[in-house]
Amino acid sequence: MKRLWFAILLVLALSVVASTFRLLHVGASSSSWITTWGASNTEAAPGVTVADLTVRLNANITTGGTQVRIRLSNAFGGAPVVIGHATVGTATYSGSAAITSGTLQGLTFNGQTAITIPPGGQVLSDGVSFTVTPGQNLSVSLYLPDTIYDPSINYFSEATSYLSIPGDHTEETAGSSFSYPMNSYYYLSAIDVSGSAATSSVVAVGDSITEGYGSSIDANQRWTDDLAVRLQSNSTVFGVVNEGIGGNQLLQGGGDAGVPGLARLDRDALAESGVKDIVLALGINDIFLLSNATSITTGYQQFVNQAHAVGLRVIGATITPFGGVAGVTSGMEQTRESVNASVRAGGIFDAYVDFDLAVRNPSQPTHLLAAYDSGDHIHPNAAGYVAMSNEFNLTIF
Image 1 (cartoon, helix red, strand yellow):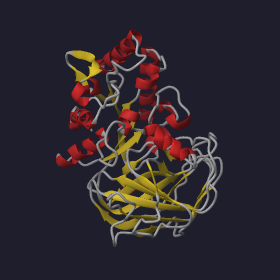
Image 2 (tube, rainbow, N blue to C red):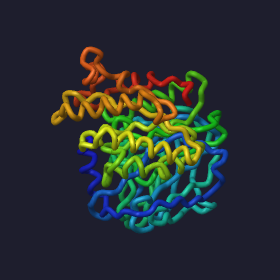
Image 3 (cartoon, rainbow, N blue to C red):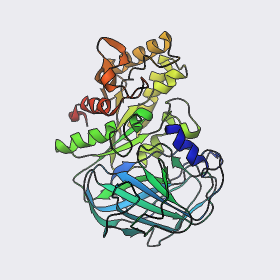
Image 4 (cartoon, rainbow, N blue to C red):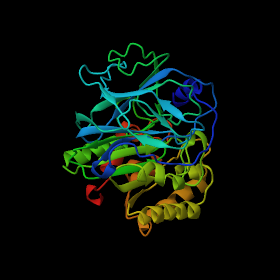
């Protein structure tokens, strides 16, 4: 299913061009803002060019507020991208692109309805009065009037968004023009709120397990979703920002697997608003590409050093089991166990969460517990993601 969505999006994606990250601030100061939702963009895959389209992007926020703004990214673009019109509303999530009547609002950028994002850049919209609550589904619509080149995309979002060609349909509430469902986010990289009870955000930097692969589409069953619910129910209010990328590695990267974890701190943590804590959950894909334990733990330490230099804390995560996956060797398992032993021993992270302990089979610890296995022996299912969330001691935040 994951690759099916990828194939659909090839029609709309363009040639890959690496670019330097820049953040262009447009709108109010970020001092009173908290990021409530995020998506890490990756390089676009080759495909054909498309113009005059509207994307409607659905996102489930993790903390409430009285104002909303969005962040748009052209991080991997080789050319400027024009945003001709943007709106935000409450998504119905009723199997269509419909927006709840009376909730649609226009977004501006320094008071203007349109903006051009330079290659490698990001922009913030102005804040709009919009009372939102934790767990609410928001819908951001973007009109792209010009031909788009190598768009920045989060490919596998575990949420249904929509595409409409041709024309500007950002103000349509019925959603009938949005004939093409997709499992990706174009350009949208964050949603911020102000007037929130939250004072900071937690960013999860991870791979497809953080992304929530193996859970149900549109069900918000990622471990980060479950963590946000736990924090709310315990009156410990944080925004929880999911920056998972399928196939992402700590040490290497490229294409739809995203840049390596060691290169993601600026774009996926520092660019977010109000971030104080990062959960780093990477390493499993490095093991599959035969990185050794020393290189992985050294990479962890480098990530922590970068975060500490700008005043952020890092919570590490042990690597979950993958026994039963085709091609797994005893050497890979030894690497996993060695990395996990180093995480548990302390000295690398400010704290750690034991995802391995949460989902492994006690009688066969190299494997996921059958009740937590999505079926591919590497990605947990919804129950497994709940178990991972429950492993957090909330006082570490």
